[in-house]
Length: 177
Image (cartoon, one colour):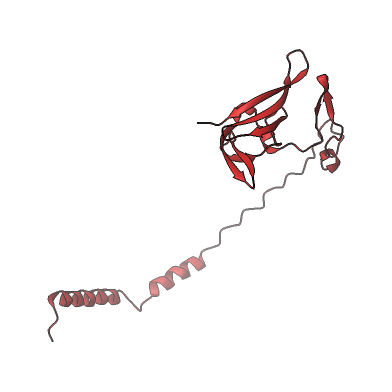
């Protein structure tokens, strides 16, 4: 049986490579033994001394009489705030996430209907999207959502009236194109 020429060349190449690799194997490892003997005979490097520890200096902050770990300071004020013109603000409730952004920094980007309730999708200045529904609060001026439609959100907020007092104002946040 005669092998094809390509198979013959491959067999010859394989045989040559195996011969070259096996010829590199040498049983004489005296050079490696000499190297390790030399390294073991060398004196060891000295270990660096431990760094000097500086004493702890306690710093006392001035004019702080309250314990910063006292959880009673996290309890909200339970007295509702009544401002002029009979406007009553519920300061006892926990503020919602979208109340930490100014209203002009928020954008309505769409709506979603879930269980017969229309939710508005609001993009925050950092690029996140939050969902809100009627009755939620938005903006930094106690803005309460009155209604949501496919194209806008109607809300009422409490703003300064320019003469040291406050007034309620209705405003709309329109769908961004």
